[in-house]
Image 1 (cartoon, rainbow, N blue to C red):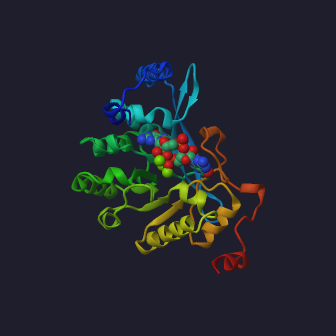
Image 2: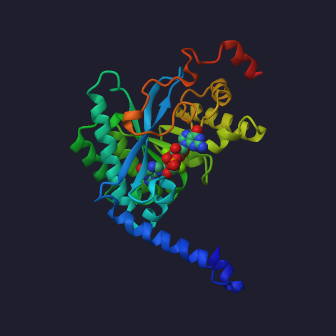
Image 3: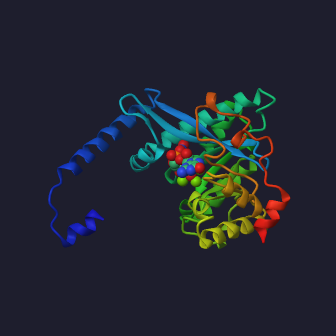
Length: 294
Ligand code: C2E
Ligand code: MG
Ligand code: MG
Ligand code: MG
């Protein structure tokens, strides 16, 4: 925007802007050493099934900065994308996530948990991406069928043949794919048929609004219907309230993620039996379901 504005108007130098630029330059420089200094952390957010029981987790990256504390991915992944550092970070994430899977594989209670890993556009576009994923799986011994790679719609638009080839190869090894933030990207529904996707993740903006606006509620329903008619699994993101959960269940959604069930936490703090409100039976009664469907 600054560039566009610069063409037409004269802009005064803003000292606050310079401070912000310096801070971001420092952050970018720091990020180069984050890996060496072992400052990256994986947090895990539970994904729950119909009864509120945990079926898997999503790995979410954090940066434990020595001065600034815990930095969320939104504050450094864009820079990492720009600089290309994301390829290394992404590799680290995959490796750490697969190592966690192997740890769970050793305990009967957790061996079923799946692991969703976010993949960035630049990372996925690497010609070596498939080989890197397969190498990590081999090195760690993680079960590929428990690994789910999350892609976003926008990254699938360029070089469709390459995207399909990569996905097909990984799928042949058992790796699954989810479309993250579904509904927010540039959605041409025709590409859904071409891509070997396993799951749609309803973006949390729709879940947030679904009990507030008819529009959002319709979108949520449409995504769920679309998913099932294409034999895809569907996960609702950003479920924060019991009302949202119940409404989603009434629409036929049976996998959920959100603060209601748990935030992303270090593995040691992950509650592997998730029961919001502490109830044993949290699913809406059939009467409630029938009422909501009217
Ligand atoms: P995402 O993949 O869509 O992940 C979900 C984000 O929503 C997470 O934010 C999560 O903490 C947040 N969230 C979950 N439940 C709720 C809820 O009920 N309410 C609200 N308001 N938010 C909720 P986080 O961890 O800050 O991650 C943001 C984004 O950063 C992720 O969005 C993903 O696109 C990206 N990201 C995270 N980790 C990685 C990574 O390892 N690699 C790449 N390439 N991107 C990552
Ligand atoms: Mg995700
Ligand atoms: Mg998402
Ligand atoms: Mg996202």
